[in-house]
Length: 74
Image: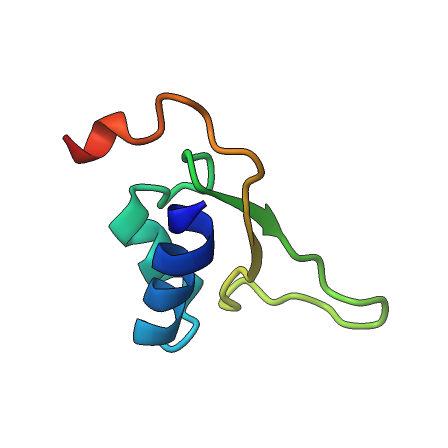
């Protein structure tokens, strides 16, 4: 509960809601980590993505965390 309710919100505030930085600190950079999930956002209908456009993601906090998620911090 402390990680979900205290640590992750504090990191989010510290990094000005840049979830990629929060994920990097937590070791979830590829979106398949222990604490966060990353899903690719698709462009709305009528908008075309050019190849130079940066991919955008939606980050969510996993619920519940796995029992082994804290081993990376030891």
